[in-house]
Image (cartoon, rainbow, N blue to C red; front, side):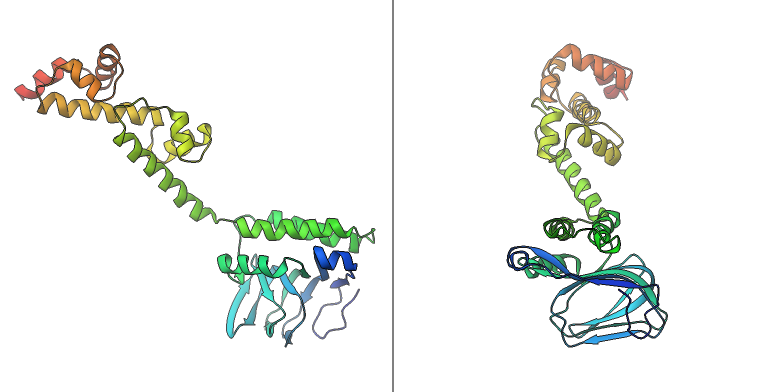
Amino acid sequence: MKSVEDKIDKKSDYFINSPTDAITEYFLYPTHLGHFFYQPGYRQHRMHFDSFLLMYVLEGSLTVEFEAKKWPAEKNNFILIDCYQEHSYYSDTGWEAIWIHYDGFSARKMYNMIVSKLSNIFSLDDPLPIMNRMAKIYQPFTKKEPVREVLLSKYLNDILTELIIYTPLQIKEVQRASAIENAKIYIQEHIQEELRVEELAKKALMSTYHFIRVFKKETDMTPHEYIINYRLRISKILLLESNMSVNDICYESGFSSASIFCAAFKKSVGLSPTAYRKKGRID
């Protein structure tokens, strides 16, 4: 359908969906959806429009007024507002967007969860998965295909669920760094015990492969290298500052045998533990 609104470009189109009673009672559903090219000077103001609006800005910029606030929105931003409340959006320069008005059984609860986390205007590290699902909702209307209401509901649910569980990449990086720091602390506090990388990965809630990769990124060492390095640090201190035997230092620093300890020490330092102790005390 073509819009008759002022300052909506003629190449814009939109569609109205009329869901069945069973869908409106139990599912999410789109009510209106479109792809609009808004011309400079466009302004929309409503006291209410009984639905929720999800809009993705493809080009340009606009201002959204909602809940007594003004929100700037630009290319690659998503806009999510409760149109049951008074709202406005407008632009002096124009913008292009795809949008879906939707409602349904869980619409308000999911909306509240999303905006409490992401706010009403937000961007995603990768908007493509959401855009693809919006396109799948839009497709049967543009291609005049049979509308499968349950499938539309699924796509809407997928979109909202993805937004609920979304964590920005920057926060993920901080979380990963924190997990590795916790792993390092655990290693240091349990250095005399057998430390298995698989168990460390489980504690960090990562797969073993992913844990090793992230650990190396954060420390420039694999977990195994870090464990050996830390055990050697302890052994060097004990060799120079205690009268413990080399054999006792081996087990105090977490090595499983004297032969493994001596081989690792000489490979790292270039001296045997005994030679290192003598050299250090002479120096």
